[in-house]
Amino acid sequence: MLKNKKSVYFCQECGYESAKWMGQCPGCKAWNTFVEETVSSKKSSGGSLRTSVSNRQEPVILRDISLKEDERRTSGIGELDRVLGGGIVPGSLVLVGGDPGIGKSTLLLQVCRNLADRDASVLYISGEESLRQIKLRANRIGDFSDKLTLLCETNLENIREVMERKKPDVAVIDSIQTMFHEEISSAPGSVSQVRESTNVLMQVAKGLGISIFIVGHVTKEGNVAGPRVLEHMVDTVLYFEGDRHASYRILRAVKNRFGSTNEIGVFEMRDTGLEEVKNPSEFLLDGRPENASGSIVACSMEGTRPILVEIQALVCQSNFGIPRRTTVGTDFNRVNLLMAVLERKAGVQLASFDAYVNIAGGMKMTEPALDLGICLAIFSSYKDIVISDHVMAFGEIGLSGEVRAVSMAGQRVQEAKKLGFEKVILPEVCRASVGKIDGIELVYVSQIKDALMYVKKA
Ligand code: TYD
Ligand code: MG
Image (cartoon, rainbow, N blue to C red; front, top):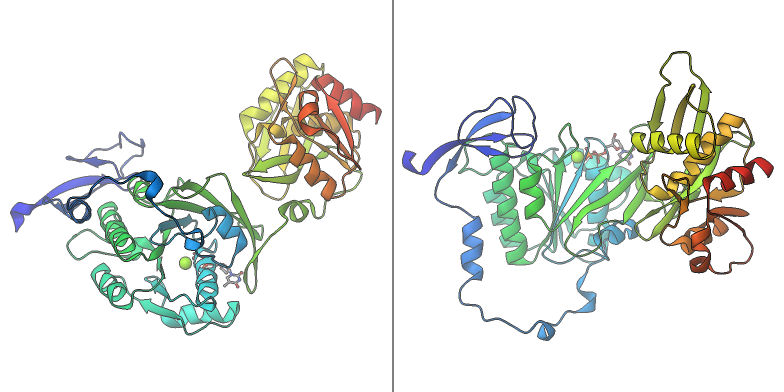
């Protein structure tokens, strides 16, 4: 017995494996994160999947493999389907990560409800809450069909047995950190437990064609515990994020074997569960101040979707030698760079001024297309001039003060038009790609100076 067991040390932050204890993890540089865990030295589960697949398969012609169009199952939540790449793929393993209390369990319970209403059999396995607690949450969400079954269980062998017996179409594991495998002696939530548990679930998903959603908690750094291990194993990794103080939540794909990774889904947390936000721009622009300096609307593409946000800047005389710069929701270094460009290329003397830049609504955006908006907001606050609230701006700023092209300019203009904007300031180089659009005035600029001149005069 003892011969097959050996003890190794795992970094609990990143999953780095080492034969001896170390003070600092060479992988993620975290201190004092190594914990001793015993693993059985005979290669377990990973190998058994391989053997089952490898009993003499012949190569097949790619073109001969047929796919049914309706293979994907809709989750009944458009925003989630979009992030998944068009629906739930049978036999896929989806990891949903996020801070505690962000709404992972709520989202998945709603998905379960929709799937059950569409006649899919669904099994919700919780290791965190009792049946009554789940029922209490469910009561807030609405009525449930009989197709949804619940199970409170943390032992993976029992879960595997139930899945093999019941063969649900979709299963949810709430949360992987509470699951344990009897063969492994370390505590639930440790790297080797999480890895082994995911391995078992992967075999169940692929073997029986069950789509499995796994909830994963995140570490201080915002990664799912044992991230390298987990993220490699699953098909799709979704992160559920949002500001604790704001009611909306963003679902983002960071890995997706069945779709693109730059789509986002936007939800709002209500007292009856999560509600889809079909038009995030409208939602984010709600409650904008009127006739205030230092504010302008800019546009960022999130996947295939243009999202309009308000950029706010406050520039005020510095009291100390070194001016203070603070950013919320956007890249600090980028703002410093843009301020240097404003100073050198447009003659805006910012050296003795503090500057605060904020993306209103708590969104985090770093697309370079926001550059022009950030510059105009800073300039507007500096000169105390009001930019009309019917103006939107986008464009990347280069180090020589030029306004550079951005992708999908036409779509951004269309979105602004849809929301009732009257003017768009955009890069000159996008003129050809935008073409003619009625009902909205397009102001093309090629230098940051031109844009500043324009808002000064307007
Ligand atoms: P939950 O799904 O339990 O979070 P997680 O599983 O990610 O830890 O969501 C918990 C939060 O959501 C909790 O603070 C209460 C809030 N909530 C609502 O505001 N409305 C609702 O209808 C529900 C079910 C939860
Ligand atoms: Mg939960």
